[in-house]
Image 1 (spheres, rainbow, N blue to C red):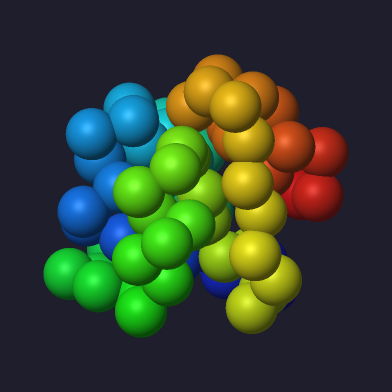
Image 2 (tube, rainbow, N blue to C red):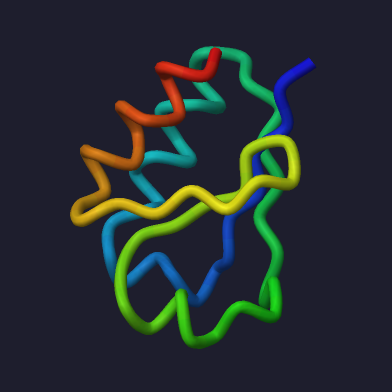
Length: 70
């Protein structure tokens, strides 16, 4: 089963919208206050998909990349 983790501090890049879309689709989503990847978090949208770091230029691109793995 797909597991996606997000950092709450990364919401500044629009990842909260990605979280909400995925939850609406029934994807197992976790939001944590900090994932310990502050350097990546400060640069742009990211998530962990099955413990693999996924980064993108925009939240929309991140959503599309996660969708490709479903």
